[in-house]
Every structure is written in C-alpha cells, then in structure tokens.
Length: 259
Length: 156
Image (cartoon, rainbow over all chains, first blue to last red):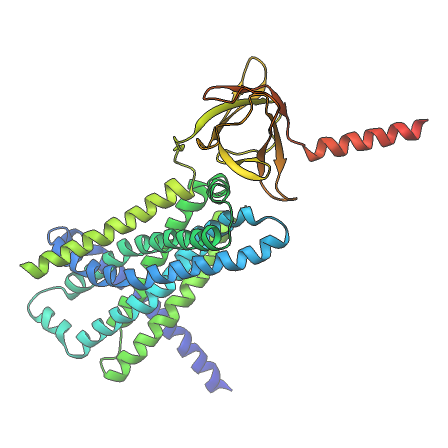
C-alpha cells in the first residue's frame, strides 16, 4: 500500500522534473535567437527540411479534406434546400478548426518525429557533446534554428491547408455538385470575418507550431542515448504533440469564440 | 554553391506559397476584397426593402441566371435601396419595362433577383433603371400582418 503511494509520488516528481527541464530548454532555445540573426543560412536550411518537405503532404491532405467536406456538407445541406451555404460551411470549418489542427497533427507526425529522431541520434552518437567540446553551444547551434523554422513554417502550412481545402471544396461543390458559383463565394465572404475567423486561425497555428516543435526538440534532447531510447522518444513526440494540439485547440477555441 | 542556391530557392517558393495562401484566405474567403466583375452591362433597380440580398447574388430570368448583383447602395433622399445589376452581355433583348422582384431560394437559402419580362419593344441598355420592382418578403412582417388580421376578425 505504502509502496504504491511512494511510486505515485515518484511518478509525480518525475513529471514535474521533466516539465521543468522542458521549460529551461525552451528558455535556452529562445536565448539563441539573437545569435541566429548573424547566421541566417542555418535557419533557411531548417525551413527547407521542416517546411518545404511538408508542403506536399499538407497540400494534398488539405485539398482532399476540403473536397470531402463539400461532399458531406452538400448531402446534409441539400435536405434543407440550403446548398448555397456550402461555401460558408467549408471555409468556416477549414479556417477555424481543420486547417490549424489537422495541419498541426500532420506537422507533428511528419516534422516532429524527424526532429526528435535527428536530435536523439545526435545525442546518442555524441555529436552534441562533440560540439560542446569545441566550445559551440549545441542548443544555440542545433536547436534554435529548428525551433524558429517550426514557428515560421507552421502558420504558412496551415494557411496552405485551408486555402487548398477551400479550392477543393469549390471544385467539388461548384464543379461537380452544381452549387452556384457566385453564391458559394458571396455567402462565404459575407459570413467569414477576417479578424474573427482568419486571424484567430493564424494565431492557433502559431501556438501549435511552437508547442509541436518544442515538444519534438525536448524529447530528442532529453532522450535516453540508445537506439531504444530514441525510438521511444520519437513515439512520445507524436503522442504528446497530438494530445497537446487537441487539448490546446479546445482551450483556444473556448477563449476565442467562447463568448 | 549550387546546392545551397537551390535550397534557398525552394525555401523562397515555400514562403511565397504560404503567404499567397494567407492572402487568398484574407481576400477571397474573408471579405477584404472589393473586386467586381467588369463584364456585362449595368442596370439599376430601386427597392423599398431588399431583405438580406447580398452582392454577387444571382439575377435570374425564368429561373436561368442572366447576371449578378454587382453593387448595393442606399439613396439618402428617398430612403430606398439602389441595387445595381450586372447583366450578361449576351442577353441583349430584355424589355425596358421588366419587373424586378427579390425572391428567396428555399426556406434557408440566399436571396436573389428575379426578372419578369414586360411587353415593351425597347430593350434595356447600360445605365437604364428598372421602374417596376417588388421588395423582398420579410417573414416577420408577413407574420405580423397575419396576426393583425386574425385579431381584427376576433373583434367582429
């Protein structure tokens, strides 16, 4: 009985310790931002591997999500004779929710796991210690550019997702199902508010970008330096990022659209 | 370095694509743009009440779309709504005594302008004004009138 309470306490302390280390790491990463401005080449290389390589999967998913939304929405809306609000439905669900959230989930799977594995392996093969030996701060040199790249890429990817989703919905709704083109756009433009919907979506994706990249970098940096440790850290990255995105999405939605 | 240059190029493409997507969301999905399609000739019509008619709503004749609502204004002197209709240039034989009404597509659908052709020999041309119009039906007013007439019946 007592043993169980002790184990519970140990687990609690462990969680808080990891949280503390995570926040310290974030603090050190942010401390490297000034030094990064001297070497923008590092950032560009990371945006290439984080952003450019994710464009295809994000774009294709966005298009298909928009197309499916239009198909499903048309089926329901046509029962009420309200097919013309299809544009509003597709755009609102994409810009407010699906764009930031699904793009962030894809980002966690596509980019987060890669970052964790990369940094975990750097640690396991003692490249990070090697940098430290040469008086190069591994956090500033390796982690900061990756963090900033994630922060920049995520809102762009989410915007790409939403825009292609709207175009996919337009293609299915107007092209295949015969919704009126003008009604599709005019209803959308009348109902979607630039500040309320579009800006809040961008803010969401910024938050998700920070959280996903942070979790991925921390898991990699904190991984047990063995092949098993790296594989477990990679799994944890995807699970924790996805849960964090879904949980934060609820909180952000309640804050933004709650009243 | 050639490789470095292609990396920079692709990053540039990525950033540009993302910014274009944001721009698209702001302009086309949001309501920042004020673009009107220039094609077609413009005809104005005055209504007492346009209900919830929006710009770009369809203009139909016998159920076929012949144009779009290109602008909605308000006349401060007569307190009327001034609706500018952009009619497709291939429909040139619309009589100038055509009757314009505002209809609703379905129970929850959006409102549109329906044109009933008159018998005039003269055809509508750019800048003309439709004299005969009928306002949108506002559901609350109809219910109000109905209740009012019911109440009057009760008195007698």
